[in-house]
Image (cartoon, rainbow, N blue to C red; front, side, top):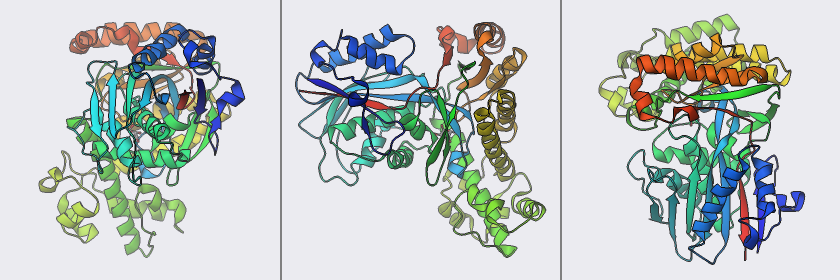
Length: 507
Ligand code: GLA
């Protein structure tokens, strides 16, 4: 038997890394073979024994099905260094993959059933058969992320074969580190390997981004793209519609520290509603600016997102453009009457055309549609991403850090996705010498990301534990400490890791 590693990094065509790096090993010896260790070494820089035990446990469990093609898939989580809620607006982001991931070991079946067992018993075994289209389970159920991937991939397939897989994840769930998209990517790669499907990375990333809407969240394309295409020691500046990327190296004399606020950011119920409200307000802002541009004699071509009505595409000077934006989006809170008048459509027509959830048809969300604030966050955040990528590439970490702080303030005040806990963490980071700090991911809880000088990393992490967990939370949210007694694990550092990949064992 042989094991072959396919890596989804920096290539148009998949490379068979086994021929490049020599990771061709005997499956029989795999559990204690140094080759597995070398393979793990090529991915993880620390905790190799733990990783070895983790992979070995999954392989051992998969041996309950003794025969058949066996694959090992790994998909990392991500931290977004800067560029929040810009992706679905057609603007860039700057994430990197982290040292927390999802590993699946799967065996091909002879029928059309998919079964996935999870080592974390909070996530019960998922079983479903490959019917088209797949039906989503209750909102928030983890099975939906597996189904989201498969539902997309079976679309054009006359017949497909199922698999049984065992999975283990180290990405904290509901922490804004993209555990869900890592699972979507992992499930997709497993299904592709089992069914011998080849899809070009960019294409796959774009398809999986849309596919994840299956779970009911209207996210953009950042998470799936970075999990698939990340590169070791680099962040990726991702652009969308169409997807494209540039690598930016992360300076070696600095460390990326991630801290979980302990406030869960689940994409369920209220949080999902709040998340989805932002794309709705951005779509309305796009429509309103487009309508105002038409009135002024400029017709943007089929504008779908804020980047399509950007001044860059128009023969207007800055002042004229800003006047048009003000006329389109002010006052800061818009009601249905104003929307109807400005878009010359009824409330129902607007709701259908821009996919506004039913719950806001009788009454707009609390505080009205805040298109003005959302617009300003998005376009300024997009500028910050461009400047930050340049600063990082030039080694100007001070400027990069200031842009991170600026991004947090904009997320807090204009996009209103921060929480008192995330703000407290950013303040503590600022006082304790972080070069930059901000919330990361969708917001409404989850993690902050910090850039610190390597020399102060340990001290900085201790300060976070003392000032945030033992100080702020003990005083203001003791309930969160009770819910998460292992909070010492909530602070960790990460290198920029490689993207998703797959090991194959053949009989
Ligand atoms: C979630 C989405 C991403 C992106 C971020 C916010 O993670 O999945 O596409 O919109 O929120 O930047």
